[in-house]
Length: 445
Image 1 (tube, rainbow, N blue to C red):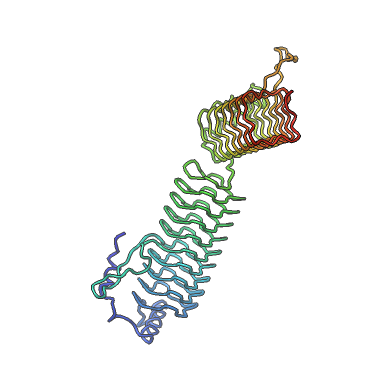
Image 2 (cartoon, rainbow, N blue to C red):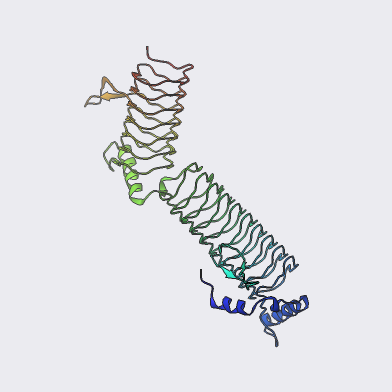
């Protein structure tokens, strides 16, 4: 990022000859207070490149002051009024800014590494990139603030901080603690937030596009309407988080603790599902049967939803939840169902041929046959079994599942838990059962 002219001009005159004495700094602060009060002789404080490391400036009023490249590391600024300050590329690492007000401050390229910002106000603050060259010494040029030019807030404590509307694009917030912070409508495009704590944080309307949020903690956070396009959310924790209106389809969610509601899907897909539920409930008199092919439903929560008879060929459902859902006679052939939760679900007569159910939870699921009825509705005495031919069920949990008459020919049940499962009349021809748990299972004779 190029350096604004106002900052360039300040630095051209700055150097060793411009270092202020403590007496001069006290005088500047006094004149600044007069300037704020619009008293005669008042002058806006200009502390560009001054060294105030370790200074006790708690509750000081420096609103609107010029602190470009100022070294305030390890300083105490508890309750300080820094609204609208020009802190471009300043060094505030390890500073105590508890309850300080930095609303609308220019904090581009700032270093806030391990600073304490608990309860601080940073409403509409600008924390984007900014790089500042300090005065040359012995033919070398020194960098002021963050060397990378990105605002550095690594390991900073920001509990309950107000960052409403703040601009944090490309900022570094690795391991920062933003518990209970307000980041409503903030911009964090491309920011580094690895391991950040955002428990109960307000992130409604925030833009996290392309941000790195590996192992971020979003427990109980409000992300309603947030944007996460291209974000890396690997191993992030979304337990009890509000995620209504968030489109995760272009985010990386590998290993994340999250179940997405149907409301997070595209509107046209939501309508297809609504129409299918109506079709199932009315026995085909209303609505229409869902026919979807190779769609992405990763981590979607279909718990309790009636998807009986739906055609969902080769769709991706990795880690989706179907707990107590009805999938009777549904077609899920060749679908990706890795680590899905089908606990207590009804899958009688389902087609799961060649589907990948590795590590899926089918505890207590009903995967038995459906009795075929005659046209007049009377029993025909014939049955339509569930089809799991060639399915991969490695390490799946099928304990207590009802698999009577199921077609498991050539299925891979290696290391699967079949304890207590009912497999009477099931077809296990060519099935792999290496390492499978079969205690209490009722096997075909």
